[in-house]
Structures are given as structure tokens and as C-alpha cells.
Image 1 (tube, rainbow, N blue to C red):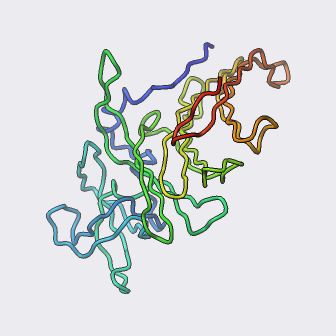
Image 2 (cartoon, one colour):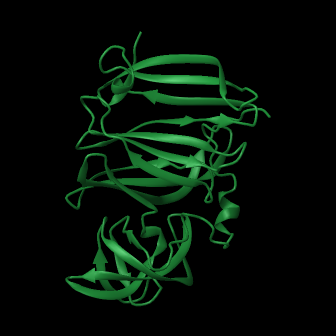
Length: 278
């Protein structure tokens, strides 16, 4: 089977997914009885309607507990999803109210060596993206970084796949980069041959978040192709060099990889961007 690269394969199926209420999507279904973080500054309402009385405000990073998903649906900035009945701390008192699901973070994780730094992300909006000779709807995610519970910065980037593509985020520390505090990777994976397999890399320098790149992978039962970064702690080359490695190959009879091609491109991080070395 031919390897398919998904560098900009985003969401021809978003429209149909937006009208599909099976709720198997990570972006739409928050499990009852579990706690989550608030993604954006939001209001808690007395009923699952935007016009209902406001019970209180919750800021980015506030912990809420989901008590139930409502049938009521609301659309904000192109994203259509349910309201949730939640409990939250309102000035020291535990209260119950209703929060629109688009304001709940789908994932959160701490900095590798600093539990005071929290990263969380979720849907920022769904909008049209120009692909050159056509446009299509695309999920745009917002990543926030908080230090001591205060928002330091945020960045918006394009998600890969559909509403049903699995996603996971992780911070890896600085890996030897002097100007960076955390290397962050947001991974997307459909989990099947021909599906999306891609990673967005973002750097946190202690003050600002910097979108770096989208790297896609492809695989089948017979072949594979990968792209990934190697950082100073992971190679023996010149200090502060970042290596972009592209490799491809096949599998032998025992399913072990057999590399047929490997190409390295070298960069340094200067001026808040990757600069290719000659």
C-alpha cells in the first residue's frame, strides 16, 4: 500500500462530523464524574443556555467536575457541541451550574521538571482555511501555558485529522537547548493504515510559546516513512544543533524495520525560529 503523507490533510469530513451526534469524539465527550480544566475564561450559567443567569466566572486552568452531558447544543466560532452540568468552586463554595463544552480543555499536562507550569489545549474555533485552489473547514486548537495558575501565553494552531482523530500532548524538557524551557509535542493519530499520524512541535521559552512545525508520518503493512527532530542531548554533533531526520524503509519477515533512506537537515534556534545551517 502506498504511503500517504498528511502534511495538510485537515478536515474534509469536519462538516459531516459537526452534524454527527454519535459523540465518540474526544473534542465533544467529557466523561461524567471526572475533573477537567477550563480552557478559556468562561461563565457558568443556571441553565444550559447562553441567555440563562450567570452564576459565576471561571478562568483558564480552573478545575471543574463534569456531572452530566446535556442534550442542549450551542455553536460558538464554528464549533458546535453540548452543554455540561458541572460543579465548581465559586469563592470557596462548591456550586453547580452549566458550562458550554467548547470551553473545556481536552488535554492537559505539566512541564517535565516543573509542576508549577501547566499546559492545556482544546478547540479554539472551527473555520475555513485556504488550501490554494479550494477552502475547507478546519479545527483550530488553542494551547495555553500557565505558571502558578496564571496564564503566561497561548498559541493557536491547526489540528490534524477529524473530530475523531486521537490526540495527546506531552512536554519533554529542553533536551539541551539553551534558549528553550520546554519542547512540547501535540500528537495526532487515527491508529490505522492510511490514517493521520502527525506531530505538532511547539517551544516554550519561559515567556512565549512558539509554533515550530508539523511533522507527518506514513506507514503501511510493508513500508514506513518518518520525520522527527533530534535535539542536542540526543546526538553528538555541534552544540545547539537541531536535526530534522527523514527516514523511510520496509519491514523484513520478522517485522523489523529495514532503512532504505535517511536524510538529515540541520538547524539552529535563533530569533524565535528555526534557521537552516549551510
